[in-house]
Image (tube, rainbow, N blue to C red; front, side, top):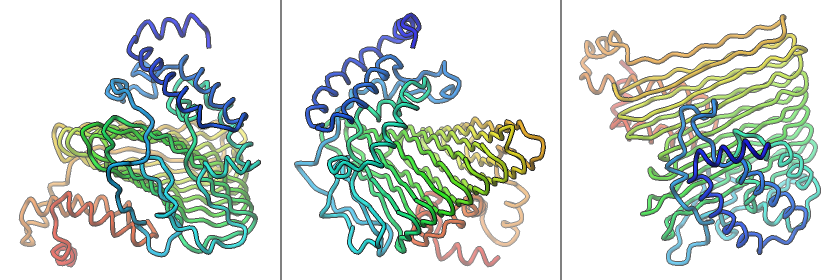
Length: 459
């Protein structure tokens, strides 16, 4: 990066400079525990780039509607293992394989890694790094070289500088994990503002099959916490992946995440992204369809309230011909909350016979709620079938009137219609335990009784 540009950027925002100086000191303490020379090299380059980039500002187009000043105002120390009190953390899914992390620290005694099928490797990232996994090294070296100098990805760069823990998952050719895998990241108060930088790497070789849930949640404390997550997923030829992501952080927490799928020939990916918690949350989700026959489904639901701010940035890159993608995101906004949705479909010049659909629908429950949505198609091929659209609106009063005519009071009718709007998103989720959890959360937020709901549905 040009030194004059960097100097001017820092001059414009002195508090960003102060923050990077703070993390220099944190980095020095962190590096004392790193022994792999190749990893140290990646992290040192990332920290240097992070110092140049600073944190994003609303002057950058992709961050126009999401300010990180409240994050910058904190001096986050690296999260450490709890010393005063421990918490019992159980997997949401029954009979699942589970990796459990509390405050960013892997907890083997709470995890469930028994009876893994042949050809399936699942272990914490720290263990994989110590055991010198060659495939993992190649991926981290390549991804860091691609990401650390991008102006709008400074949080990814920050993650590269401090990555040490997360999940390493590798399914070899035709391997099938016949039980769901759950990655649990639980955060609890520990007396100060703290940050974790989980790094998840998932590789499915040819013909492999996996169902995985990333589950992020925590408890509110006097000081906020931040989860800065990067997940990289490689789905090879004829492999199948069902990926679920639930963000239910504490109401004063921050959650920033970057998730990328790279898909091979005739691969199938389902992505279900649910955002419910945190004060500020942003997920950057990207899929690259790099070989013919790749199929991608992106399904998303966000439900904001109070003064929450949730930002979804999605991108599907049709790099070659004969690929299919479908993207359906829904948002429900209440009180003074805000949401951002930027969805981009790129169809490159040689990507003929592309079929793609993009939709974002938003329901506003309050006059003070606000959403900024921008679905975007960029098409450079001429033999394609693509569509996109977005809606922002309130409940249909004619539907409210119909329910009232059936003996349902006005408030209950509105809650029932809101539930029906959201249900279209999570009913496509095949993990029944997760579907039931989402139903329960929605019913609680709408103050609906489940049994009464069943009676109303019969109407």
